[in-house]
Length: 133
Figure 1: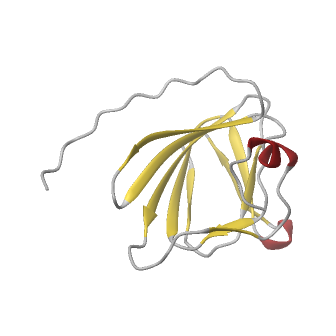
Figure 2: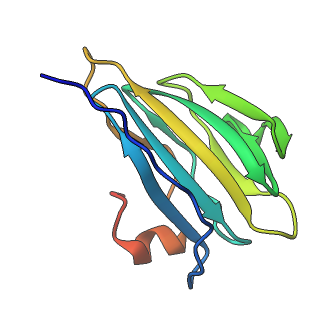
């Protein structure tokens, strides 16, 4: 199979609600999303069984938490974190401006990837119908 380069462009969207995730590009090994998170758009404690994820803040700031709500990192513009598969975490916007954050996820080809929720879904997550409880 012949491989092709993929060009993409990101522009912050206007949207209702507290969070929006946009798939920018993908291959059989990785996916690149940009998430925009407003106040109240935090997620729940969860893990991914088959993906390692690289996160980089484009604007705003973010707090990542582990089990027991332990702060793992407070990250600002141009800073990032790597979350290995199986690590339990959640995050929230940590500034007045909306958080814009890139997530690059690399898939383990030998493991089925599932999002495993360790805590109840947040109300916005239930309303979106994109997450299993």
